[in-house]
Length: 245
Length: 276
Image: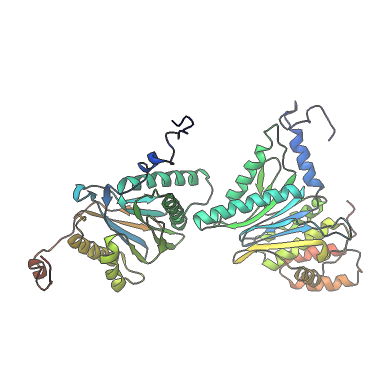
């Protein structure tokens, strides 16, 4: 009999109870986010789907949110973790505003803060299961960055999460250029989102495109893309594909 | 100030509503050797008088780099100053690590002031006996702040603290309106002139003063002794008893630098030493 058995406090992360507290797999997930820099700022697109495994369960999930005056945050992955991140950022921006001085946290600062949060959670084996896209404009400087659930972060002229990396980035690498007009930027994003809609089974045809410029943020009302399913390649997809069914 | 029955600890108010311990702490600042600061729209210069205790010893460090964009000059208990500099460096480095962005000076100064205030409201602590001139850049430009042992802080165009700082303040008061648009070199020259004022006739040499600069595109750094000596020679800023023959030349050379501000300086060289 172990009379001297030490008892952990209920909320301890040590011992067997701790494992049920760690994130092991995501439950309600969002799919790709795609974003690019254009002439006046950043454009970001994401659909409004929240999948529960293979079920497209929620169809009005806003996966892009404004942060403070200067930033937009888009997330894919676990929706509840995204909501948690929004709470952290809300507090961060609140304290920043409470200083009430001429200074404010710009997109670069928010991106780095998120990187620290994601990386530290990963180190504790309790990640926030998201891939984040952070874009914004401050003092004329455009900023677009991404952070993954393991804390990998970088900036670029165009970024995407999940399937977007495989399907959208190649399109952007071909067709993105400096000083895209707003219309060209939206057209390019829609092209990417259409490909994702055709090919990503977790994508739904209801998306929002968000824009951030020096003046502020706008997130569009949800809308759908026109699709065409009569391509001959779609009619007989197995043709020419050896071994497929 | 004379001793009274309300000055034993910092948590006792006097009937007149004063905290004597805090005021005594500010007295310690006045006893330290002088430190001055002045700023333009894009640069800030800090200077201080560094007197060694004896010929055998080196002088105390009174100017500290806190980050690439922030520096501080102290007057008073230098030990307290070192501790506060370490705190400031820590805050800057933590902010930089989390946000990859420099900590805005205004916020650092408030954190410092709040830290000093704590010591005025705990019976087991004493106020910091050091005044800090914090020079730094942020988004809104160049800033110079003075942090007091009382926990107050003020922003200045130019200021001087420590012993005989009044002489420097008088000099700065006459010239501060021009500082905003001064060039970096003019600002350094004004700093050296202000330091000279606190020396009361003693020759200004780079071995007894330290000058540091921070500005847009120029990280905070302490100027090398030779550079300072060269500037002293170039501006002909010498002690007032050094030969009136040198002064017309000084006036001519000084006149070639910008503005009327210089005229004020050169006429002053013909005047008798101040007897404070």
